[in-house]
Image (cartoon, rainbow, N blue to C red; front, side):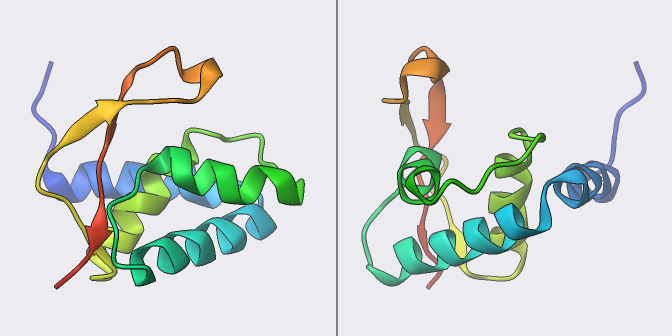
Length: 103
C-alpha cells in the first residue's frame, strides 16, 4: 500500500465531512467550540451527548472525526495524544482522543 501524505488524508477527511448533513455539521462545530470554551478536556462522547438530544442526525456518523480534525486545523482545539475508553454504549469502549482548547 502506498503511503498517504497528511494533505491527502486531510482531503479525505474533508470529503467525509462534506457528505454529512449540513445542519449536523453546524451543530457539531458549535458543540466542539462550546466544549473547548469551558476550559476542560473533552471527547467525541461529550459532543455526541450535546447534539443527540437535539435530534440532529447525519447519515455519515464517521464525519465526527473529520469535524474534530477541522477544529484542530482551525486552531480551536488541540490534543496531547491522550485517549480514554468511550462511554457511549454503541462505541463498545473503543478508545477516543481527549481534546482541549488550543493555547
